[in-house]
Amino acid sequence: MVNPTPEQTDAIDSYGDGLDLVLQAGAGCGKSATLKMIARSDPRRRMTYVAYNRSIAADASRSFPSTVLCKTGHGLAFDQRYGARLQRPRQTAHEAAQALDIRSVLKIIGATPAIPTDLGFPKPMTSKIIMRCALDTVARWCHSSDTEITARHIPHYDGLTGKEPRQQLAALVLPVAHAAWGDLLTKDGVLNLSHDHYLKMWALSGPRLDTDVVLLDEAQDTNDVLSAVLLAQDHAQRIAVGDSAQQIYSWRGATDALAKFVRELGAPELTLSQSFRFGPAIAAEANLWLRTIDAPLRLTGYEACDSSVGPVDTPDAILCRTNSGAMGIVMEALEAGRKVALVGGGGDIKRLAWAAEALQAGRPTDHPEFMAFPSWDAVREYAHEEDGSLKVLVNLIDEHGTKPILSAADSLCSEQQAQLVVSTAHKAKGREWPKVRIHSDFRAPKPDQKTGLVILPKEEGRLAYVAVTRAREVLDSTALAWVHSVTAVTA
Image (cartoon, rainbow, N blue to C red; front, side, top):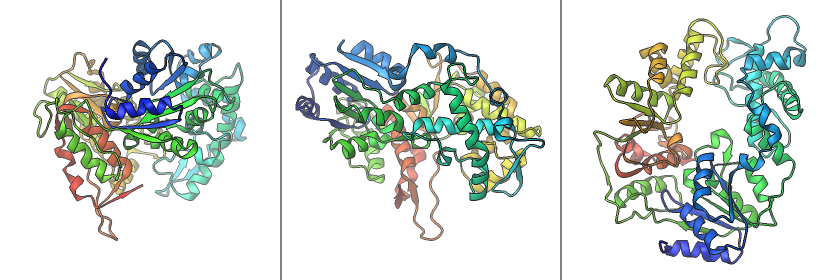
């Protein structure tokens, strides 16, 4: 057994004092190893390790002591009675709208209702689109700790951000969202059940875990619904581990449970700062981003790792900010005859391409990126004004066309076969490769027109920190050189 570092020894000793505890563990700093040391230090107590995803839970089951139950939040909530409903064939928003009969729910007679958009043109709200918005709303509510579905759970869609569009959207969506949840609660409901649905049902029931200790992993990106359940386990000792600087899923409803454990439980906060993934050169790059976002943690590189920062001609992985940026790299590599894998597969890209095809053919789409727009020209106009990630996507589709993009998505290979792995930074979380290049779609923030300050949103800085800490040996972060121009950070 490897001897614990002084920081790991402090964590084990604090556990032994019976304290609720928060461990801020930097990238590659041995958080899993530390939790295993804690578990092995006290074989008398039953522990529940709550993992970020199923593969991590499976790996943990093989390496933690037998006294530790390793599950995801969904695994804790699952009940066999949900099995049959979860295995139903995929249900489209159109099929769900028909099954729930939302025109009757909304008492719509005759013409399709329409609502205003940010660009001024009316948006016809078909039953399919209303149903898609309602299902998205239920999903966001399921991620929260709220007990009631309200307008704040309706996602923000491009083109439907103004006060009047939002109010009229809510008038159509909320009654259907409430009807959908009512259907999901019934044994023989017509809508498909998802894993997030039964997790919410479980959370609302006030569950009590049969355990002495709760170990929450990746706590910085825990949905409020699960955080609330774990915070309520006051009969157990609770330990949350993660890295607040790696919180990158707030846009999906996740919040930093580490801060909640400190605030609500008064838990002491210890750190794990010795990285075993990379050496001092990459640690220095990580610390540059940690300073930029004003994070208190600083990493120490592992002296035994020979790592460097500089240009990489043949990276093992290229990490992108956006799906469209990732797809552009995939297409370039395929054209060069390389075998390419895309982390997470090509499903998201294909759905975007199909949605663009529908708009180009004059048909509406319920894809959340394009739902508010009546035509591809309207998407172009909005993207030009927005000048952000949507513009990159529009340029990709206009340059290549949808059919080559769909063909490229079908030409991907497995990571085991690949000469190059492409990933968004979000999907690269928890992963590592020997040689990593950061793609240029991590765009520099523009100076504020009033103050002249170059302002970086903090979550974008956290995402860059995640990206640069995926490399073990060589990191090419040339595309992020603009970090030195940042003069302010927003929350």
